[in-house]
Length: 157
Image: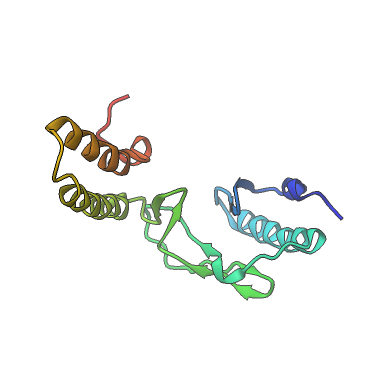
């Protein structure tokens, strides 16, 4: 039986691991790059078999990040099943959009912060303004600031 951390063995594409998630990606310049990515997906199936680990193809998405208009579909497969193409995906709590727009991420953060704000308004009926401010900032601050370094284009630094 192989080691679970040998997933990198023989991979030509870049692979990122986080807990129970895996992202395989590569920059596509020509058809050869597309073929290499498919070969890496085939290697992933062998790795799954060698390590007696279950990969669920229904949880897998293919996504292309580009600002150009592209009409050809992504035709990658895993275990003989076509990987569905998505226009966005959530990775480590950040919504990545195929058109390289941050609108979905901003809308998600705003919606989540509104829920937290309504929660903070209902809870602290008692307490001084310092306590209410602390409640507000400890619940809303992390929501609004999470991942801002990558999606907030107006941030300096």
